[in-house]
Length: 194
Image (cartoon, rainbow, N blue to C red; front, side, top):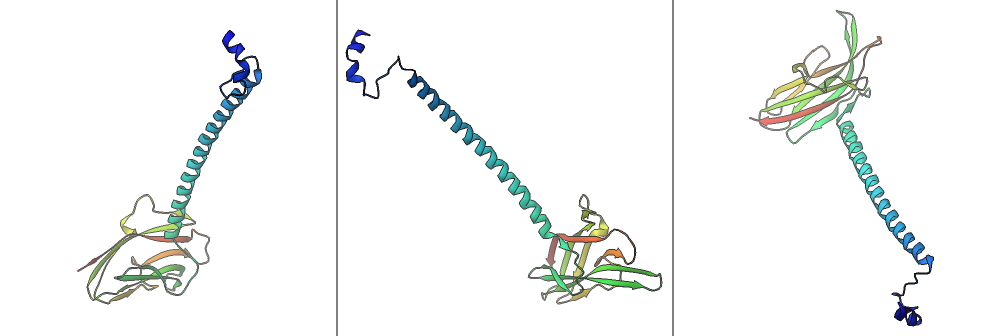
């Protein structure tokens, strides 16, 4: 200790010099430790925020993707393409159908399917239906919502108002307050060339 105090002036300006009698050193040391601790906590908090933001973004994008597949019911009475591949095009349109025999007036979605190839093709798909924005058959696909068609080379099939087949979807009874089809999806779509 005597050696240290005797040579005190030599080391006073050195970074190795420690003035044990000065409490400022301890305050600075504590502040540095506290700053390091705060920086580590901020980094951890930022990592958690980023992770939450990333998962929220993924969840949001999945929701958008699901909405992108849904074809909205918009009152369009002209044919519009709802599915297109190199082999086939599927069109839909909305139409008011009058059943004068039974006295029912209803709206339907009709489909038109075109084989674009010189081969016979098998088509399969499932219809997911949304009534009042709630999915009717998202949990299970029943046979009544499954479509299976065989098209000859370059054949076109078009549904009609009077037909009650797999190529139309009921929208709503006209003049009645009932559930309304708000959208549909074509899911599990496959084509097989024969």
